[in-house]
Length: 151
Image 1 (cartoon, helix red, strand yellow):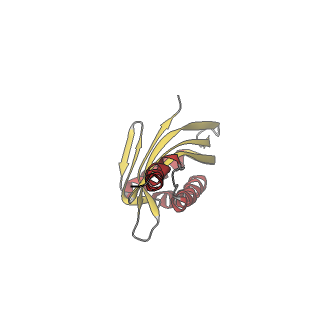
Image 2: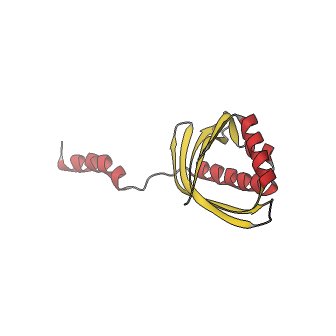
Image 3: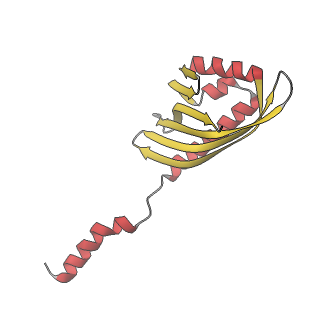
């Protein structure tokens, strides 16, 4: 092989090492849209809309709590909405990685809530891990959501 041929093929082998990873823009946009729906459901106190963001057998894992399936998720959320009202909320993705029909998201959340019993306002922030599953129509629903409040 000539030196020029070696240099050409050599660059093809090592070039990907120097390139930025290709982010899945469509995935990021889909997840951002789902975040907007999630926050809207929380602020509206809409347990059915909240549950609709999960797969049929979706799971929510929070400290001291475990729910599986849309029916349980909706019931749990309705109970929560009877106790607190979400006034504001933000979700910030720190990492989003796709592996076939699954996507793994790590991020931070922050909510301002009103406790219905006494009308007090509280800030709640923390970290989360969400596993998203792509559906047959190309949309993404949460298969697993786990949140960990800051101390």
